Length: 468
Image 1 (spheres, rainbow, N blue to C red):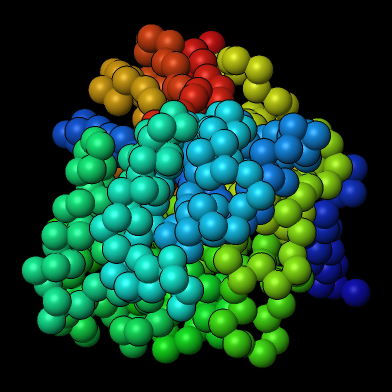
Image 2 (cartoon, rainbow, N blue to C red):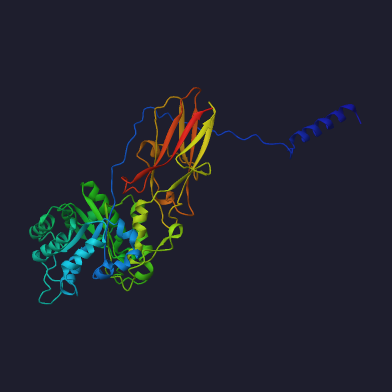
């Protein structure tokens, strides 16, 4: 064989050997390739302060509600509700079909509820029933407000049902009465959102009545929500957004009534469909100012308990108080923060090398109340003009940049796919890069418990950065 041929073979073999991967060799970690945006000219916005209110009541079940022997069965709900909800039918029954006096019953309700506010639903209907005393008018409105007020309640909200534009003068007079008798309170127009075909703006009369008071309340038979009767869901979202547009409020009702809808059973479905209604409003960007839970049409559903299990294992029961337990927890609970896999108890210190990009993994989990879906607003509070620091917040699941939301636009709303559940924590990757000589930087990770409850906020952890 010629010497030149041997040389060629040697070169080829050497090249092949160089192309093989040494199983003992260690790979050098790939550095993060991150582009940082210049945020120097941006201003930090804050969200409007909102406090979610929740009223609850159950027609004619007053004595079970006020029985001190039952308090342990619904302590969380009883202690955290804004107040008591009642309507014209319930108060008529309290006066005429009650083994105890109405005044005594109202006083017992006042002593039972930690929240001393009341919401009274009135109506333009002239009769409760056909009995001699079954009338409904201004006299019965005054009687209800007298009973509640004399018991100690502050009647802060009222609504009027079955109003019409054709009878506008009398309707407005009735609204004025329930809004001003023995004090001043907000009064809402009450309507059925299944009546408007998906958008409140389709109904000229409804649009006018929305302007008569301080806001709009929806009737809420969840059988209709379940079937989406005449686009009830879409209409409900449109009502909240329209009321915002004209500077007024909305109260959304959750009621177990089946409304004749096949396939919906209060005893089995009230909790599930209530969740669907609340989370649906969140995902549509239409969270109301108030939730009114009025237990009409309960169809044999239990009143208690509010939850099953205790502590970490507690879960809402499909009962009249169980739905309220879930809603109150959903509106008020906070996620817990882990930094690089470790729970943050106050502060996590992270050292970075000047000129190099460091990734810090922040995981928000539902550790305190795993059975409840959390929808907080997450915000990074920091000195955005700190010299020598570059930063970027990125959703771990899809690499989308959320820096503007979490730092500058008031906070990142954790709704839809961002909602935090026991099996679905939310992971945010924080990328930081420091120039030589940059002073330490602290980032407070603040959580607001819900977009409709931004006054309920706390710092869930602080990330302290320093150049090493």
